[in-house]
Length: 250
Image 1 (cartoon, rainbow, N blue to C red):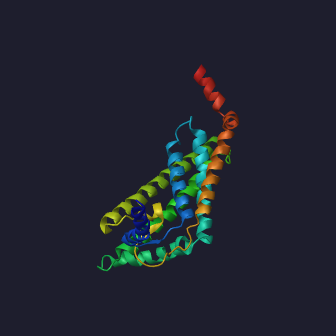
Image 2 (cartoon, one colour):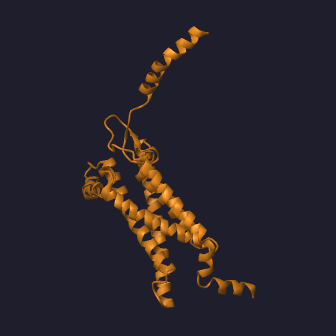
Image 3 (cartoon, rainbow, N blue to C red):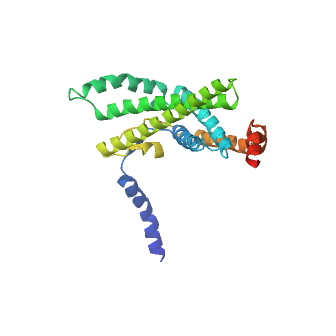
């Protein structure tokens, strides 16, 4: 029995080495904070959109709307100060190359991957822009920036239009990812899940920065908890609720 145990122990390093060699090579292309911002924004916008028409879930809608605003601003700041791979300069470079790629397709020399990257970047920029404006217009409604029923109705229409525009861009973004994944037979959504893409070579993003991603998630959860703690007071202070309740009682 002792010999068998020694043989098993001595074989373990070799087994581990063979397992490591059998794994396909991959490179890190997206850091953890970028992925955290992506999924937090996806969840927050989805929740805000689905709760938009419900009076019962109004506080959830407002909380998630504020979260969208903070996440978009954080993503823009991360684009300035974060890794170059996911920075605003990289977006600008892809956008500058997009017209040339689109002109090349009728001539038979368009590049599928470069065209996808340019179009996807365009959709991401539009998504962040629409989401930012939708969140700001929603804040304007909640804080009553405009006085007068007509102005408030106009802002409400703008807010709803921006929310629908954001959803349309999100669906375009998802459709583009599915399309390129089918055409290239490669899962282009995977890097946003694990941060890596198949291929040999050095990591394009040197540091994963998991503690910063955990801090971002903790900040969002803390904000949600703070909003939840103030829910009874916020509901009482909202204008018009008591009037609607009185109308229901009648």
